[in-house]
Length: 307
Image 1 (cartoon, helix red, strand yellow):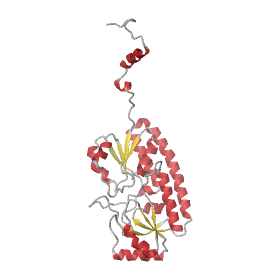
Image 2: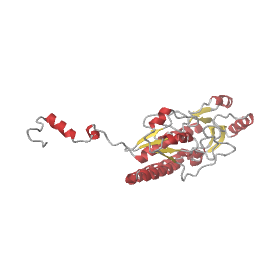
Image 3: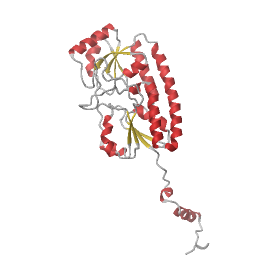
Image 4: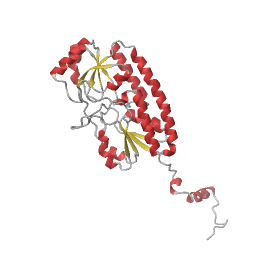
């Protein structure tokens, strides 16, 4: 039956109610279109993805701050939180645990960020990089994000993956990448200049995860305490490490907060060395960034080698 002027609502509230009847249910509830949901395994990758994707995307960092990627296992609750993810960005090697949930995320594609990276071999100076769990020996050293130049290459891979998935906004992703790449290029030069003034460039590290950083910024890994995560040095290896520390006049040993380093105490005590903690992952503090992470590492290394 047609609506007459007599049948129409007469109060403002009634007019509002009548108008809402013509809206879709979603619009009536004020729902917004969901943004693109992405995931990255570790903080450095997540921060790069956030910068390239922009504020319109939601980026989930899978590895909690402070956790070790070498021993991490996803919980069922974390898997549920990833159900809306479309792209999962991973490093490869240290975070292959994410591959185990690929079947649980049928709408998500896995993107490894090592494309175009000059990967270093896992076997350097007789040391081996182990993956997560038994039977996962790695062919390449996966710690490539510890060079700002590699970070720029990672950002390019992120931009290409986002553009392929969401071609409508490809221009935005490319522009965000160009801006970030320029910042990382400047950072790379800054860190090179900062560490170029060091007289002693030799590092003894607890875990063999710093070869990309050393190569990028003119340092040398003189010795590694744990050739693989969880494997203590043999007596012969330990004897060689003591000799190296004395010969090179080492002042400090560098360890990581994600790995227990109590076995270093005899070495530190015997040789009078300081323990300097370098966090290769970051993300624990609010407002942290990939660039800030690399600057913190460079500052700590300089302090450890100078003092």
